[in-house]
Length: 162
Ligand code: ATP
Image (tube, rainbow, N blue to C red; front, side, top):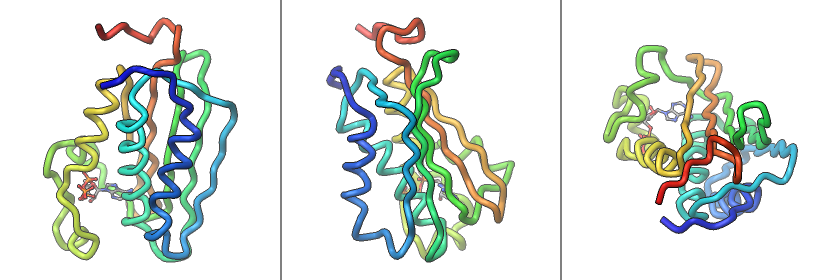
């Protein structure tokens, strides 16, 4: 992976532009608190935002709103990026498994949306490679929130991977 200064807000903006054809009347709200920069690979990070936004779009209904939040957590020494949806949600017992390769929650609910079950596994791998972590908070029938935490440049959590 390349290691360069990346403005997370532009990565998100690129993703939204790319996903425009599948927005289907859904609204995306951006809550950006500050100009957040991390060290990493812009293409890989865009893959992460693509995967999370694509899922949010896949598992919501027409007219729903998807909320993006971006900020720096100084006490945690990291950038926080999250995607919240008001979609079908994830059963408690499945939350740890959705990051496994090829894992999809029952075929019936996923069939009409299609997919391989690789998206979240790839997203997790990329985030891991950036020394970050990804979390899910979800309630069935209410919605899901995926949060990505990435070390801030020069922070104590930013490990040197060389
Ligand atoms: P693809 O590989 O094309 O992304 P996928 O969506 O099935 O296909 P993952 O992105 O890995 O694969 O997601 C795994 C499973 O987690 C999905 O099958 C889906 O059931 C569930 N899931 C992921 N994101 C959401 C979400 N935002 N809301 C509800 N369920 C979700």
